[in-house]
Length: 273
Ligand code: ATR
Image (cartoon, rainbow, N blue to C red; front, side):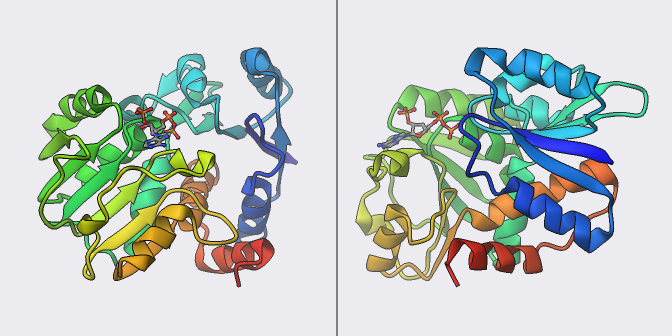
């Protein structure tokens, strides 16, 4: 049977085996999908062994995405732009193709929530790997402006400079932020430390949509803050997780699974509904 897996560390709590097993059942594809948690300095060797032993493809998650970028034979344009690889496919002619489906997953999830990106004013919080992966797919939707704010301002400036050929993208400090944004996307890892990005609550208004790339069984701190200040719409990253997986599945199998039912099952599994 065709074998796939996700590499990460830690990876025990990954939802990817659950999601891909449901996709395979839904599309009647014969495959198995497992987990691999190599030691941090063993990833390159584990990846090689997996493909030497007949693996067809894999997902790569924290902390291996940047390393995977350097280990594949060939990069898709979106992986090149993201500087990271979350999906690897062994092609028929034995080439390891590195792709990145995270940004496409974010945009697909935003659209499935009915968020309009064209001509909108978007604020992206954070300038790490997650922000980098999101930028090109967001800018491809032609927002009127995309502002990046990051605790370390120089990193936001660097990202804005790197992506300015794709649209109107600027960097501002959290203190400089002003005016009315249509959508705020939190790509920071602040909530992993139980913290919040230092966004002035005054920027959250009743006509704003808030997206947190993180998710959990209950509201993230950022989503709670947004609700407290009357945000019109709040979304967490669970849908992005399912959508990036659907995109990876499509890369591997050439068939696109539906995501709605899988997302519902995942929520039930997490105890959210
Ligand atoms: P990822 O790959 O998940 O993006 P990362 O590359 O380590 O992870 O980036 C984490 C991002 O979250 C960074 O933008 C970081 O800000 P700095 O560049 O200033 O480090 C941001 N971040 C983490 N904790 C934060 C906090 N408490 N407040 C604001 N931003 C935070």
